[in-house]
Length: 250
Image 1 (tube, rainbow, N blue to C red):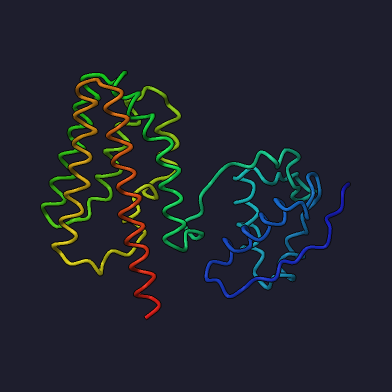
Image 2 (cartoon, rainbow, N blue to C red):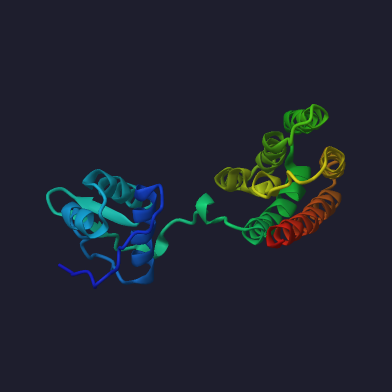
């Protein structure tokens, strides 16, 4: 049986001890300090080393097991998975600590959504178009009522991804969730009501252009409209992040 190398599991003052312990153990596994096939310290050993209860340890190990990083063997304990190099891609909301982090998610989104919009224009059905239009109208309704339309915005893009007829597109978008909408995370509360309304209506006009291209079944126009929308979004939120950073430094 392989033995684990010496590792450091000292926890900081985080509120969610289960999550913090899981993250710390995950880092030890990914770095190779806990080797594939090696046994994790026992619940009692981890509890003593970290100062948390055995329940917290058990929940942290369960989270690692759900991520495919460890396996448990009845009566023997928990072991680092042998194929740990294939641990699943994920985005931890607690790691999105700055505007720059959020904007990197937007860049990731660009690489997918431009192609998804093109495929939607090629493959969408009449029913798909009805769903996309309903989502577009829901955004408009929420903007007019003074909302930020984050959920409606996400649903609009999700309906487009679904109409691409590639099941992995909507699966990945649902995995990202509202991370794809930067205003969900970036602080735009300093904007006036007029400014908020103006930029939401600009975004909506870009949504309409994407919809029109998909309705016309024009993949080239859909790709261009999606690129324009996402490039503009990137620039908008770069400006928002820069203003927020400047305000924070005052």
